[in-house]
Length: 114
Length: 458
Image 1 (cartoon, rainbow over the protein chains, first blue to last red):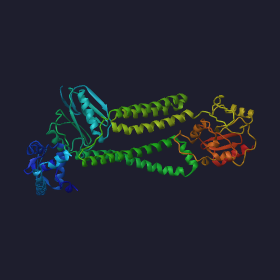
Image 2: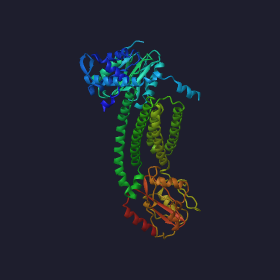
Image 3: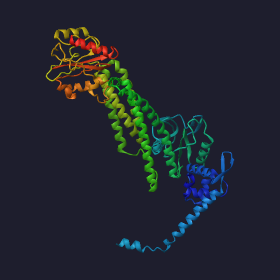
Image 4: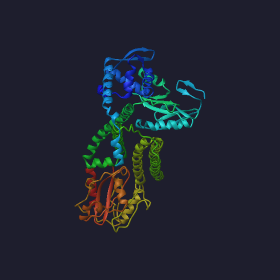
């Protein structure tokens, strides 16, 4: 069930996994996501906690060490695979969307004039 | 303002305020908005106990609040569990500050009104709120079902005999518990219905991309109207209770108890959030209704009321200065003088009689009209079946109109009530009527029937 949930990744999921390509402390993930998305995506602490918990449960990330109260995580093979699959999906979307480049909007103009 | 850490949490000075605000997890927005209003007024929420929230005086400022339910936290945690500490650690790393925890409920605030929400994925918030609401409602429903099963069993026994049923209807304690069980069950069912509604609405709105739908107190006029209705609902039973207490000192205790519970319910009603208020309105209406029924019974019991057949002349015992349970000798003397009902003995607490003298021979076709034959309809009126009959009789309704079979037999009759008694039987006489009511357990039924028969024939 949980795996099904991650078949298509939402933006926060995608960026959290991206930020975990190198080992990072849980609380720093929010900043990493912010950096990676150039300020476009922000992950709230509640969402981050829930997602990290879920990712650990399905084995997409793993806990590496604990310094004080700070837990460190890193992505696993499965996580990388999920990221790749998502990226491929996004690439397909991008390729399919290429027709938009040739779209001049004549049909829309025609409809509007009618 | 100086900030101090105490073992009970943060204190910002001596000024503390408490607010009573019952709300359901499905309306966290209402709670957040209340906290924000208080913050603008210069009070910051710092703790909670049940539905009571504690506020400390701070510099008035608009702050943003966020109420979350964290499921790894427990009501039993004296100190935050490691998972809770982790969660709080993530929050502390942002501009949000932890205000207080109450079991699973976690409240945060920030002065940065543009700060991103703690839960940026609404679907997670939806899931946690749904879970929190279920945790609150399911035990209520289970309790309701348990009560209903127990009382259902009891009711089954009661319904197996007309006599038991009459006794059941005549016991306000019994009926009261039955209604409480019913209320519990309805409350639980309504709770689940609300969660289901929340679930379906949100599933639909997530699909259409509209985001989460939560209850908010900002429902304007409807909110105020509900409050007014609440006052009205409370006013009627209070007035009635007051009147009933005036009529009978013995029942002042009952009346005060019922009154207090109504006032408490009203306070809960008027202070709660919109959705909780709607829910409490149901309880308030039910309680008011029960209060009215109890007080109606108090008003009418221990009063001699008499209604006569069509054409008969009213003769009221109380008007004539004969309370039912006193002055029996004088009453009997009166009967002898008038030539009827003289054979009735002291164990009858109440009578209805006409001024027409009775023939010595009562019609033996129908000497006793058992209560079971009346097909009593379920009624909330009073603690007794008798009271139900009384209230109908007070509207001067002939017995034969309600029980048509009697008219065909040539009987006309009316009814009367007594205190904690049940109808035993109705003695009928053409043109006049007597209803005999006896106390419980004074005589075994068979023995009493024989007695009545003999006395009537004498």
